[in-house]
Amino acid sequence: MAKQERIKTSYPSVVFIEGRSLANPGKPERIYYIRYRKDGKAIEEKVGRQFVDDMTPARAALIRATRIQKNELSNEEQREAERAAREAEAGRYTIARLWAEYQNQKGNYRTLKTDISNFKHLETLADKEPREIAKLDVDRLRLKLSKSKSSQTVKHVLVLLKRIVNFGANRGISEALKFKIEMPRLNNEKTEDLTPDELSRLLDAISKADCLQAANLMRMALFTGMRRGELFRLQWTDLDFDRGFIHLRDTKGGKDQIIPMNAEARKILQGHERTESAFVFPGRSGQKRVDIKKTVNRIKDAAGLPKEFRALHGLRHVYASMLASSGQVDMYTLQKLLTHKSPQMTQRYAHLRDESLRAASELAGNIIGQATNGKDKVVNLPERV
Image 1 (cartoon, helix red, strand yellow):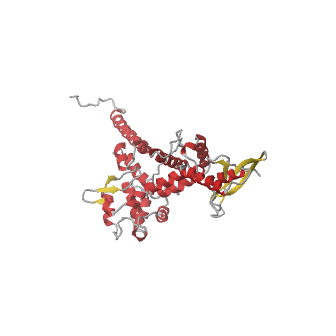
Image 2: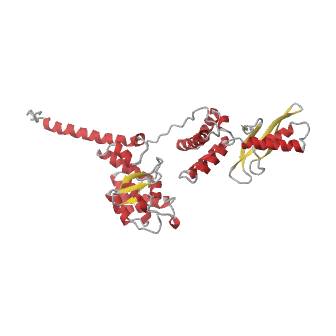
Image 3: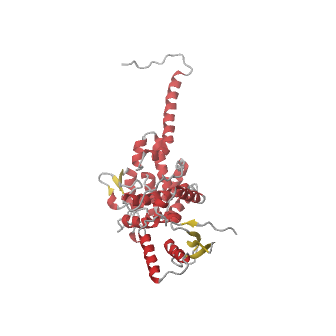
């Protein structure tokens, strides 16, 4: 049986492997080993588990110190060694410690749950200070994640690492990385669209849906292009019926935005049942909704739409595609309506506008062609002024 790879810590000759947790079945747990020489012989000794034995790299280093002494340390020497280890540990701003400080200062921000999930992938770097992280460490992490995770997930993990490191560096409590983190290349050009027949079937399925919340959420996504999270956060106080605007809270771009309330959206919102909740589309007990996937997917399935079509975010793409292909909306206006942070994000729809422009150009050619095709007569053009 091959020996499992040992992963170095910042303490000399203290390593660990990733094993299965005995305290929390199904979860990983670090098993620490120390290396030293005794009577000229190299020894590797298992010293404890992360959770079961509350073992840390600092404690493992202390145990190693006792092993390499000819005699056990005196109580006073052991207390001094423990104090030195605690002081050394306290002065180290590891990735794990910086992450804890980051959370304390940021509070319960919008993407906290996603960041907590992504941080689990940074465990191999958690005990390292930023100055101890080599480019090879990040390259190995990226390669490992890319074998089982999407490029988007890998990017989110690396962006979180970058944010944590920058947080410490900006506050002067830790150093910045000595290299630039390379992000995976993403192919985000995929857009979802519906044929006229599919759209007709969907609108029919929405009108027959039993759940008005789900039906109106889908209508709003289609007629405004709002993101799922923006719809879930939408409150009645965000609706300005007098001036015809919708206030979007905490958008993906990082700040609040204002979008027009078109006639269809106004009709939907004014006819929507208002409860005691502050939210337009509340979840349980009137709190902010967190999901409605099952219900909207039932409507999608009733319409016979493709399995890969996303019942809410896909409608945002349909909204954008219809505007772009109309030939009546320029890319800057579309960017503002979609609250995209940069024009590059809107460019995925540019080819649809190109098709519209091409059709207009063909129309001009057809008109001129009809005037001249097979005819010898001169077409009288208006005189130049």
